[in-house]
Length: 321
Image: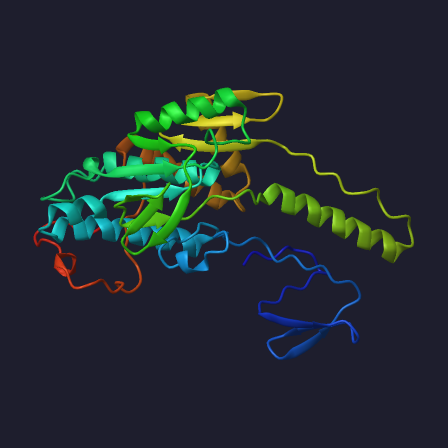
């Protein structure tokens, strides 16, 4: 947790279980914390369109834990594809389906495709990671629907150049441990990865500043500021190596220039110069070597049905390195 250096600010970590409006208190971990003004900022959660039973098979991507879990599932799929003797099972294990063509879905599809195509060819003996299928399913007529149409078209071409299959105007109707049903057609995907949604940090920050301004004005006895109006600062999405799209309203670019701009923006918002320098160094090394990060499998191995994918990986090669 990063703590702001403000003497009047206190930060507590805990789980809020209730609010007592009569006593003007927040109940947190069995404690009662009084308040004068209360702002509830609960964040966003994954949407499964009323089908919460999909969640075990389709993790979302909202936080670091989600990203680590997705990395674990992707790497385990390659490991089990290396171990199995069944060709059909191997094909299913090496098929990755992402639901939702927003920025998160586009970036995830590009990241998985690049992981499969670059830097893993020496990690396996029996499979070719480049044979993996990455499918991006979008219910609307185009991906990145909040971007201008030319940028959306560029993103589609860039994904296809990476080998991603972009499937538009298609809706997922069912997800289970065996695969995904799209338009009533069953695709043999081993995993479905989470759907990108429109929750943006910029909007949350703007609302937080507006709310704090209202409270500060009331405490000081001043007239409150005017009604909240959100001014969108722009949208960015990376697709792959030297491929991205940027829409700042007054500036719309794609390709390598957009990719560098995307990187600069993300580094700028990191906390601390040390973190900024470390990320720049890591990205530069990945750019030169095509090694896109630590391929580390964490957590317990999930249970699987009795099949050949329970076999141990082939010995004598680097494991997840």
